[in-house]
Image (tube, rainbow, N blue to C red; front, top):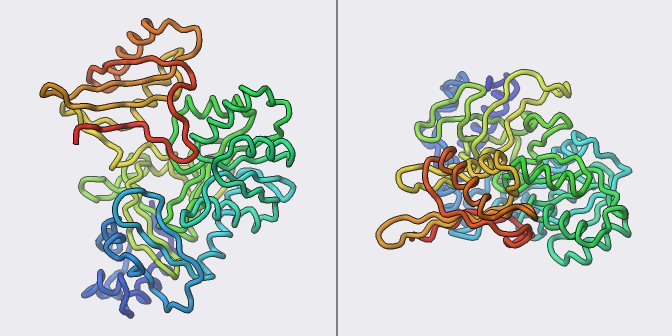
Length: 410
């Protein structure tokens, strides 16, 4: 990605501000003369920030402004390790609302829509972010939060919700419940805004078909505002990123060197305007690529591909690196296999044993599916697995992010 002059000016201004005060980046960048940074190449020599840095700064070590300017905190949704606390100024909240409202507009959502919000509220940035953007847009927010599926569906019918905001896992659960209860004709949804976890093409098609909606991928992470820093458009060819608020790079996960546009690497984000807790060259662990060229929608905002996986999602079995995205891609090639799976790795009798549970369509021969999926897995990923076909709906559904890979060796 070529850095624009405006982005460079905003980054220089941010760096001067941060290095002039006693704060996280004042210490991290100590000894660096900002005036020596004269080009994009100079900027790319600055050290990366990673999640370990943010955890070490707990609770408020990332704060870059006085206490009286902080109006809110959020925390990452991860369940392990020290939490990451992100403080926000009023301007940060306003900027986030502006970006999120753009996301809704990019998806063709207007003030006449009724937006059914199921992601969680609280320290997590999800629910409140979806609501913030909805109110900035001027649409009706229906702030449900997760859980209580009976009430979700009643409100969806009674309030005539037109837009569903959810994780892909919960969207699938709701779609299945709507089909099971035979209330599809009472549902007025036309669009789904889906975020928080990666999902495969097979899962996308199931949700879209069962709900009768067009789906939009929304991107974001708590460390960088939250969801809403990018979204796909109606052409479904990547996600447009709001590059007047964030500058992004794609680098080789191992070397940290820039990857050419079009090549997959790790997404690195720098905030251009954030005040409460700015980030410089933050390694997201998300794998994607810059999509070169113009989008058919005509938007000037640059695109990245939908998230292909995470560098920390990878498991190594028998010397082979395995990403969840590879399993999802493999399942799209097998007729009769659903999008839902669980991959279990155990260490028994001195060797690694892999078991793949896969939901298969009703009426399929499970012994045939076992062979087809096993052959496809070996061909696509390179190792042999024990395949256990199960009925649709047998694997657990989640209101939040689904766990699909279980490494029981440690």
